[in-house]
Image 1 (cartoon, one colour):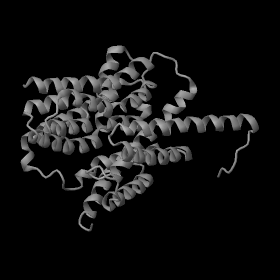
Image 2: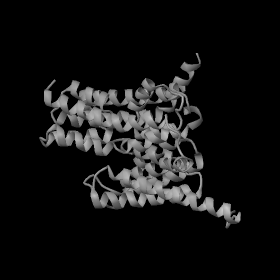
Image 3: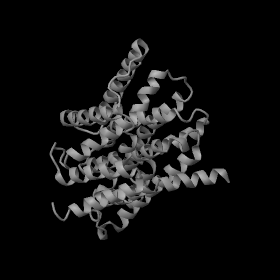
Image 4: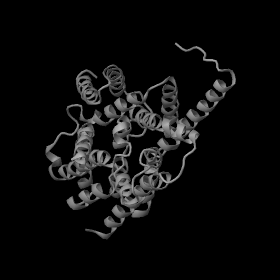
Length: 239
Length: 105
C-alpha cells in the first residue's frame, strides 16, 4: 500500500527524535514522580500535553505548590511559538481535510517540525508521512515518560552524551536550513536576539519574539533585494 | 486521579493545542500573499536559531554564561553536519563528542 510506505518513511525519519525523546522523557517521568505525580498522571500529561519544556516547567510549579491557572498560563506562553511553525506547515497542506488537520497539528513539536521541513518534498500534501513521523515521536515521548516514572531510580540519564541528543539534533537541523547568505544572516539575528530577549525578559516565550524579529527582517531584506533587481538588474559581489 | 491535577493536565492540553491547530486550520483555507510566504520561509531558520542559542549560552539556573563543554560540542556538530549533510550520523557524532569532551572538561 502506498500509504503504508509513506507512513513507514515518516517513522524512519523520526528515529533521531526518538533518540532524544526517550532519555528526556525519562528525565521528565523521574522528576514528575519526585514532584508527587502518580504514574497515570505522568502518562496522561505526556499523552495529552506533549510539550517538553512546559511539562518540565509545570512539574517545577506543581512542586512549588502552585495552582492550575498560573501553570496553564505559563504553558500557553511557552507554546505560542508553535503558532509560527503551524503557519509555516499550513503552506504544504492545502488539500487536507479539516479533521485530519486537527490530528496532524495536535502532534506538532519543535523537533518533528524541524525534521518535517528538512524533508519537504515528502511532507508536502502527504499526511501519512507526517503522521508516521509525529506518531513515532509522540509514542517515544509517552513511553520515555512512563519508563522514567517507573524505572527512573535505576537509570543514568546523564551518561553517554544523552543530555546533548536534542541540542545536537537542533544544530544539525539548523545546518540543513542554511541554504544562502540570507539564512546565515537570519541565524545570527535570531540567535543573538534570542539571547538578549531571554536575558532581559526570561522564559521560553522569548523564542517567539526573536524568531518574529529575524523572520520579519528576512522579509524586509527580500523586498529591498527585489526592488534592486527590478530597478537596475545589477548583481553585485556574487561569486 | 486528583481533580487539581486533571485541571492542570486538561488546561495545558487545550492551550498547547490551539497555537498548533489554528494557523494550520485557517491559513490553509486562505490565499497567502507572496511576501508573507517569503517571511514564513525564513521562519524555520529563525526558530531553530532562537531555540539553539539559548540552550548553548544559558545554564540550568537561567544565567547567561560561556559553557565550554556545550560550545565546543556544538561547534563540532555544526562543522560535521555541514560536511556530512546526514542527519542521523551527525546527531550521533554530536553525542559522542559531548560524551568524549566530558572526560576532559
